[in-house]
Amino acid sequence: MRKISFIIALLAILANLSYGQFKEIPRDTKMKLKSNNLILGFINPKNFSITHSVNMSYQTSGNANVSLASYTATLSYKILDNLKISADVTAQYSPFASIGTNSVLNTEFQNSFNGINLSRVSLDYKPFKNMYIHFDYVNNKNNNYWFNDYNYYNRWNNDF
Image (cartoon, rainbow, N blue to C red; front, side, top):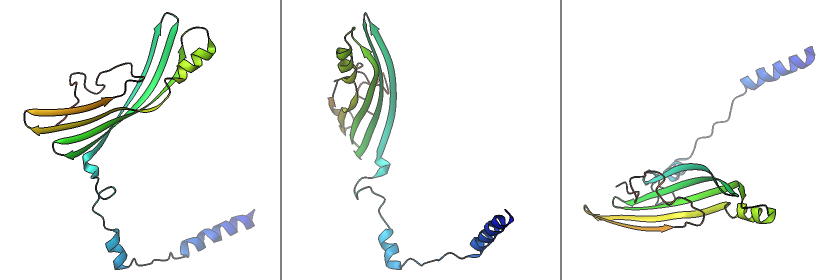
C-alpha cells in the first residue's frame, strides 16, 4: 500500500514539474481567424431572436379524452428595419388520447397528434409609418387554439 501511495505521489510531483509546449500562432493564421461576426457570412445574430413556448392541455368530452403536450419555437429574423420574417416550429406529443373502447382506433387517434411541423410562417413589412403589410401562412392541422399565444391583444404579433 505504501508503495502504491509513493508511486502516485511521485507521478503527481513529476506531472507538476513538467512544462507544456507553447507554439506561437503564425500572423497569417491570426488574420484568417478574424471574421465579421456573421453566421454563414450574411446572417447577423443580433437581428435573430427565438421565443419558446410550452403548452400542456387536457380535454374531455363524453367518452373522448385528449391530453396534449406541445413545444413551440418562434424563430424571427429582422431582415431590415421595416421587414421581418418569422416561423413557428412545433413539436407535439399526445401521451393519452381515446375516443371510445376500440384500442386500434385510439392508438391511431393518439398518434395523429404526434410530430414536428411548421405551424406558422409570416412576413411583416412596414413600408410607411401608417402602413403595415402582413403575409401569414398558418398550418392548423392539430392546433386547437387559433390565437396569438404570446400577446392576446395583438392579433398580428407585430413588434415594430
